[in-house]
Image (tube, rainbow, N blue to C red; front, side):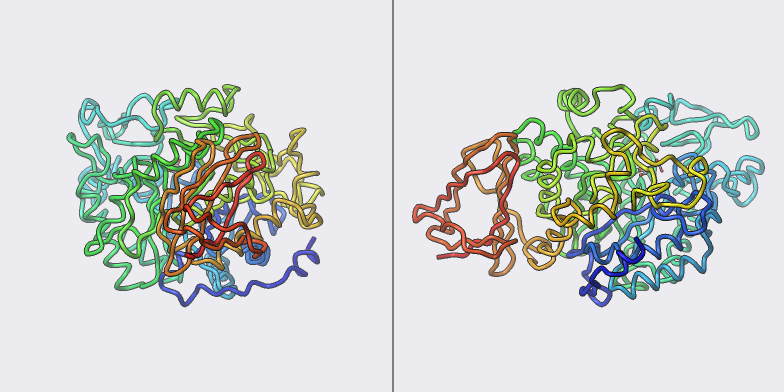
Length: 561
Ligand code: BGC
C-alpha cells in the first residue's frame, strides 16, 4: 500500500498564494482520529494524517477541514472542548500539528480547523471555576439564571436526548444555559472577556499558520427573548469584528459559518460587501433538497430552493456538501418532506438521530454507482465550494448499531488487511470498529482496491475534481436556471466571463428525454467537458433536446453562435 501511494502522480495545483483560494477549492472533511493511526494505539493521529496527505493531494483535494482535535472528554466527538489551545495527547503534540500545517502547504493545499465558540465542555477549567466561584473572574463566563423559565421559545436541538436548554448546577444552585448536550454549557458572549478570549484563541491558531476556521454552531452565540436564541444582531456584530481582525492581521484566512438556517438567514452570515462577516457559509437548505429530489425523481423543490438562495456579496461563497460527521439534518425541510425523507432514507429506527438520519452517503443512495456519481456531480457544479466527507470517495458504508453519530465516524478503509489498514492495533482496541457489514465490508471497499480499478468511484472523483478545477465557471460563474420540459431533468448554466457550462441531470431512475430552452445560445456550439469532444449544437430556435440514461448527466460547454 505504501508503495502504491508513493507511486501516485504529484499534485500540480498551488493555492497557497491566492487570497481568494477558497472560491475555487474543493474541501475535504477529515477527522484526525478516523484517518490513519501511526503509532498503533487504535486511534488516528496527526502523524498518520501527514502520512496520507499525498493521497489527498493526488485525489485533487485543495483544503482540509479538521473537526476538533483539542483536549476533550469526548462526549460529543470533541465538540466538547476542555482546552482551546491544546492538542489532545491521543492525536499527538503541538509539534505534530505544526508539521501538519507545513506539509499541507508544501503540497499547495490549505488547512482549516473547527472553532467551537458557542460552548465548552463542562470539564473546561472556566466552567469549573464559574460554578464554584460565582464572584471570581470566570463567574460570568457562562449564562446563569435562577429560573429555567427564560427564553422558553428557543428550540431544543438534540430533541431526542435533552428536554430543556437549561440544566441545574447543584454547586452554584443556579441553572446554566446549553443549546446542545447538558454537558456543553454555552459561553456568555455578553461578557466582553469571553469575546476577547475568542479573539485571542483565533489569533493563537492563525499565528500557527492555519488558513481559517469552520465556525461551529455560530447562530447561537447571543440569546434574547425576541429571537429564540438564534441569529441575534449582536452575533452578527461580533462576526463583523472577528472578520475585520482576520482580514487585517491574517489576510487570506477564511471564516466558514455552520449556520443551519433557511436561505435568507443563512446568507446573513456573509454580511455585506461593506461590512462582511464570513467568507463562506454551508448551504444547509440545499443539502436535504438534493436527497429529496433524487428520491422524488423530481427537481422542482431543488430549483425552488436555488431560486430562493441569495447571491453572496463579492468574495463570499456558499459551500455545498452531501454528508459530514453529523446526521443528515432535516431541519431545513417542511414537516411533510421530513416524514417522506424518514420513510425513504431511514426505514429502521436505528438510522435516526436528533432531527435527521445518521447514515453515510453510499448506504443512503443504495450504493448505486449512478446515484453516487450524480450526487457528486451536483455538488461539484452548483454554485459554491464543495466539501467532501472522508471515505465518501470510495463509497464507504456506516454502522448504525454504534451510538449517536459514531455510525458515520468509523475508521478510513485503506486496504483489505487487518483494521482496513487504518491501524496495527488489536482490532478490539480501535476507537470504533471498522465497517464489516455484508455490503460495505472493508475487504471490498477500500482505497487499495479502488486504485486497482480504473473505473472505480475514486478515479471518477479524481477526474471530475480535475475537470472542475479547469473550468472557472464552476467556482466563479453565475447561476441561471435553464427551463426543461421534464420535471425529472434538472438543468442550469454556470457562466463566467466568456465561458458557459451547461449542467443537465436526469433524476429519474429510468431513461428520460428533455427539451431545454437556451434562447441566448440559439445555433450555439456545444462541447463535452470530460472528453472535450463536439456535441450536438443548440437548435436555431434556442432549444436543445437531450436524452439520458437512468440518473445520468451532462457537463457541457456552450458557446454563442
Ligand atoms: C457539530 C456537531 C456538534 C454540535 C455541538 C455542531 O453543529 O457539527 O457535531 O454536536 O455542533 O457542538
